[in-house]
Each structure stands twice: as C-alpha cells, then as structure tokens.
Length: 71
Image (cartoon, rainbow, N blue to C red; front, top):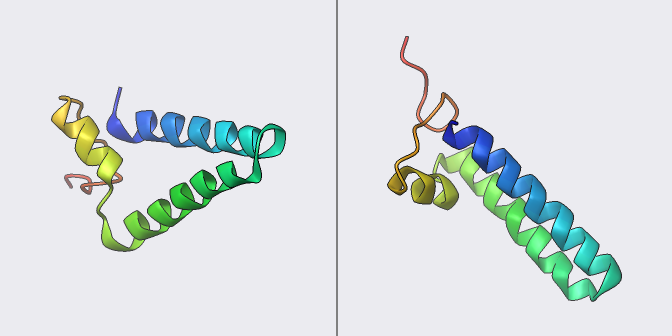
C-alpha cells in the first residue's frame, strides 16, 4: 500500500474520532480536528508532511502525491 492511501485512512479516521469525541466528550477535542486541518493546508502549500516522513521511515513507498510522478 502506498503512503498516500495510508495517510488518507489515518487522517480520515483521526478527524472522525476527534469530531465524535468533541460531540460526546468535550469540545476541546475539536482542537485536534483544527490541528489536522492546519497540517493539511501547510502540506498542500509546502509539500512537507510529517506523517509522510514517518511512513517513509517505516519503509513504505510513495505514490505520486508527495514526490511527483516520474514522467
């Protein structure tokens, strides 16, 4: 499985869990959702994504989104 697919699964899960915790437990959990959103925006503009770096160090391979496709 490629880094991009794993990232989408992790980020989607984290957002859903933090929204559920914000609704059922405490609105403070919505700060996690905001943090994830800010991180996604930063990675869109800079190309740097901490989660992609961690997954790459774990030995997973890139798709096209974070490194560009070989043409």
